[in-house]
Length: 188
Ligand code: AMP
Picture 1: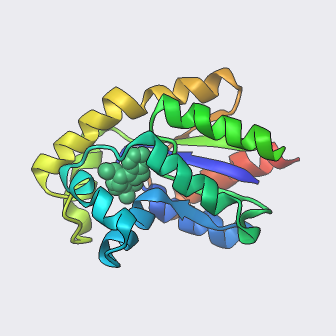
Picture 2: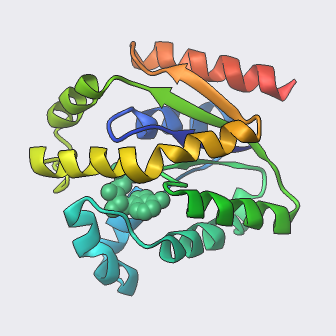
């Protein structure tokens, strides 16, 4: 089951992806987590993307897609995975479509978590993960980048009949149940 978990910063993608991972036993792939790990480990990739993450802007499409393609072709991703934070531009979505096609795979569902803007800001400012891009200024940039570059990705998958919108307001468990309902119905 190849799955995209989509939504603006602060929508709860990471939290929900971890629960989906446990329930369906497929790995979560968070591009943001991978970049943060690369920065922490001071790898070549980390050096390349550090200032971009600090600014709240997007890493170039080719760099992200290369990382994702390399990862999803590993043996442990063959029975499926949950993409969290990817694709974030139309170009990334198109490139990802091509990868799936080349590998003879299909996207199961594109699940979009719907959360009002003010709630997003409240959640990010109170989550206290110590992320350098969780300051009020950076949050503003990230939400604007989402609006301009990322939100159009939804329409791309809607055209493919893969879009499922989920109410992302509620308890973690309530939201998880809503997601499972959609996935289970789609499975059968
Ligand atoms: P996240 O943890 O998903 O909020 O991602 C943190 C940061 O990593 C973003 O603000 C971007 O700078 C970068 N990033 C993560 N995923 C992508 C992506 N698919 N495309 C471009 N940049 C990304």
